[in-house]
Length: 276
Image (tube, rainbow, N blue to C red):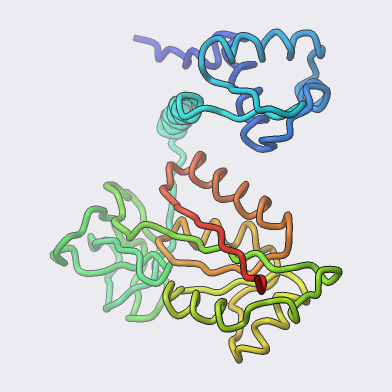
């Protein structure tokens, strides 16, 4: 029996709804219908009509200000369903086209080609371990010989890699106009780091770098912070980030995107590092 395409691909209206929800998720809460119209190549009238429908269906809610819209929890679940359907369809296509997927991992012990290994996430790195290791939920077959500490290619991967929940602590700092690092409560920020016990520390800009310098702490990454933070947290790491002003919104946007695209469960919290 022929495989039916997902409803999302068979129904143009359903696909447009998916696109609009996705655009809102990427840009909320300040959404301009004109921007969505241009991004999707449809009229503003059509976008406005979809907005009304989404609100009626309980997928979209309006704030108190103009162009202030947010997705509801129901909408986030809907997007997850859309994504899972698309992902399942793509996997089916790969299987029919015999597209084989390989994953790289770090061997924690000597491995022989063709050997089945267990998979765990250790310090953000996928590691190949003995299949009898307690608590293993995913397995793969080694494509090559590897010694401990070497990379090994894996095929026929199945199961789910178990990992701790990723967490992000964002500490907002004053801009240079507001006093920069001189207006930061260094003792408070240092205490936040000590209590959070991060696996990685990220910093954006000169103000954040100056704060770390005053504490004698080094950053693990300083560039591409928004994406790096989301990816690190998706691998079960705790990430501490110093940001100035609205940059926190960019980091949060990438976390929301990671949660949506990869069904991750990253949690985040925002603290104020300024001197009161």
